[in-house]
Image (cartoon, rainbow, N blue to C red):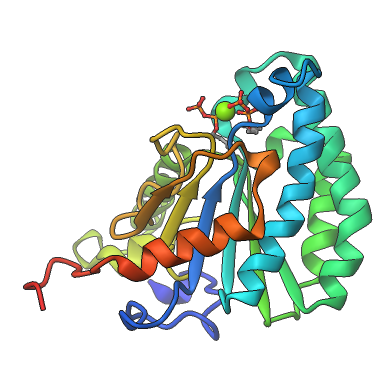
Amino acid sequence: MSSQVAAPFAQLATPDAASPLAGPRHVAIIMDGNGRWASSRGLPRVAGHRAGAEAVRRAITAARAAGVQWLTLYAFSSENWRRPATEISDLTGLLRHYLRHEVAELARGGVRLVIIGDRTRFGADLQAELAAAEARTADNTAFILVMALSYGARDEIVAAARRAAELAAAGTLDPASLDEAGFAALLATAGMPDPDLILRTSGEHRLSNFLLWQAAYAEFVFLDVLWPDFAESHFAAALAEYARRDRRFGARPG
Ligand code: IPE
Ligand code: IPE
Ligand code: MG
């Protein structure tokens, strides 16, 4: 089945977990708390989202400085479409602004931008800008920035199951041969290493439909900081906490 599925990151993804002494190779962040940050200042929610976009820059800098190779940012969930139309249009406007103003710098800095999520729910113009940003940075390998946009893990898993069923119906996949690796290759994250560390800001302790499959053995760190206040020191503190964890992957304690 692997011949059916593109694994565009195969050159970077190695199958085994990072050595326990090494820092995380892949960090994923649930960037939460923009609205509370704004309301605590008597500002409209959009001001929080704007300040949150600044924090994205700090997260990238901190991740790169720490030698992290993959950074996945949860920017908009499949459930966030339930928000008022005005907030959705503020968020898509900010995304468009980010693409127009930051992609050149990402490209210069050796960053590859990859989008996961159901982009078909965005307008055609934004979809074209997303595709252009990915194409422009596609040859970079120094650092991979994955943006989860209109992303929902259940959606992703159902789409993979549907695809597997289609391949089986077409006779190109033997259901008995479908294993974890084969199924993972049908997910939006095909070819990416699983996240070693998942951070969530804002004090909430939940995944909110983020990377449910990929998080099977991730370490979790929940930070009591609202996303717009996220600083490089928070990233460093999370890495220090990660370094204290004992990752066993089900094996006997060492
Ligand atoms: C995170 O901040 C950004 C998105 C989910 C798009 P929120 O907008 O969820 O902020 P809070 O959680 O209401 O404070
Ligand atoms: C999760 O935050 C999604 C993102 C950060 C993009 P939410 O604010 O949407 O999550 P809930 O609703 O508090 O679970
Ligand atoms: Mg929130």
